[in-house]
Amino acid sequence: MCLSAGIKCVSMSNFRAAFQYFTKGVSLLGSNAWQSQYSLCLELHNSVAEVSNTIGAHEQNFEHVEEVLAHARTFDDTLRARAAKVHAIGGSGEFHEALHEGLSILEQL
Image (tube, rainbow, N blue to C red):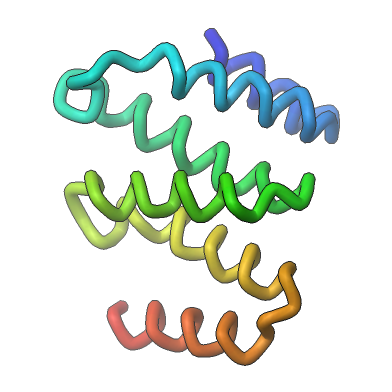
């Protein structure tokens, strides 16, 4: 339910509310959610990572990116999180580091 509400908020450009819904959804996940609800976990963590960039919450971005990288089953499952990380790095003014991170991702494709 939190995922659907967050997606609806994003569609209305209400990114702060979307961030709250997505983070609430993450907080409601059980301890073995990555095993039992993989798709939901992946979607919620990716959504938090992406939306956090729009509200300047770069630390939260990095936390959720790391969560995805730690639990993703395939490289393709990490692409949204990796892209969100590049945006966060660039958004914090570290353009050279963002470029380096982006090129690193491209090399792995």
